[in-house]
Amino acid sequence: MCDQGWQLDGGEADAGVEFGVAVAHREEQGQDKLQEEKVSLEREVQSLRRRASTVRDGYIEELNKVEREADVLRRRVTQLTNKGSQKNSMTVELQKKVKQADKLRRAMLNTIQANCGGVCQNAAVPALGQVRS
Image 1 (tube, rainbow, N blue to C red):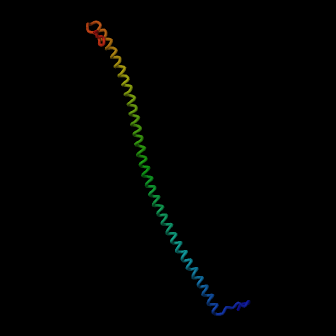
Image 2 (cartoon, rainbow, N blue to C red):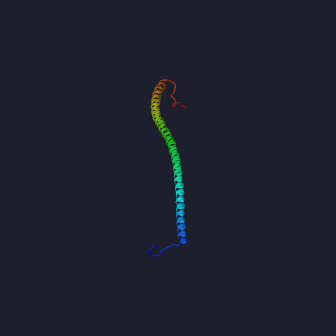
Image 3 (tube, helix red, strand yellow):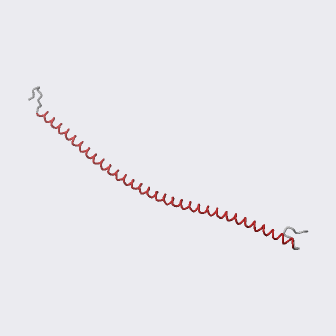
């Protein structure tokens, strides 16, 4: 018996015990649900990590492919630049040769005209452009 007169009869005691059991059962169910949710979330996290890893691996593979293609294109640009430089050098060299050949042609023409003019004056045959009508 209690000092303050708090006594429970048998029915009230049973109801209190049942209430306590019900509360404990609900707490247990709540903990089970929390545990299930925790396990579910952990699985989801693992799944997301695997997917992220797969995606990352795909991106890395794609990046490597793009880098290889870029290297090939850089080498091609270098080759074409070198080829263009060689062609420019060859063009400059050929232009110099054309100028030299033109100078030589003019000198030879002048020599021929000078020789022809002297020969034509000494002979009865007129030089080109000096035909009399």
